[in-house]
Image (cartoon, rainbow, N blue to C red; front, side, top):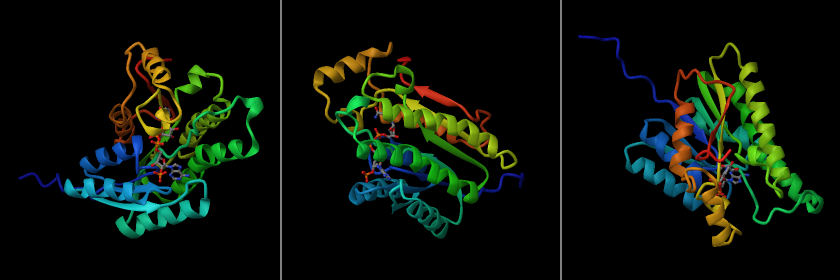
Length: 251
Ligand code: NDP
């Protein structure tokens, strides 16, 4: 008999913004792969609980934890609640993000819009990465969220893209700063993906036009993006400090 293959302790993953959209699908896929999953959300407790229930129904482990990622105190509490429930943190998926419909041109962007985009989309991931530097297990994995808009740079997205481009830079630098811990830090940069964040405020014609822009001529699905994320979240991967565009060839 070979006694070398003892069952490893379950890996624990925090997925921010996992009540809906891409994050919910990442949580479900990690749950199926055997991770204990923390389904973080901002306001939609019922939808977060539905994601938890789906994972538990599939014999997985999951809990829902409310925390606004823009609030560093709430993020620290998110890590503490994760450790209280599951004993450790191995994987951090920084999926939470906002893109309000009808983003104005730079000249018409008010202070509140700028501040909230940066608070959630940039400081939110900063807050969780800083906590992860303390709490993540050796050999852990971090996956951040950029956007393929950092490549297309369409008018109207200057502040959103500025925050996402900063995430790409932080991803690469943080990977270097974690030398010695065997932790890899990468980012995914989705193209247009079929979620509320993308559909809200767009006409059917605008959606059709954006869907046709990629040479694969369709919108991405949460499953498309979650598969790229779970690839980067797998233990022992050699990809580190990179941003992977998952966009059907858009840019
Ligand atoms: P959705 O709007 O569908 O879902 C957003 C999720 O983030 C929800 O679970 C929401 O929670 C949560 N959330 C929002 N603000 C906060 C906050 N302050 N703290 C904690 N959680 C928060 O978005 P998508 O699934 O489309 O987007 C996921 C990521 O992908 C984002 O980072 C986005 O920028 C990026 N992206 C998306 C693209 C797309 O076309 N969809 C393209 C490129 C990038 P609650 O339900 O409680 O509100």
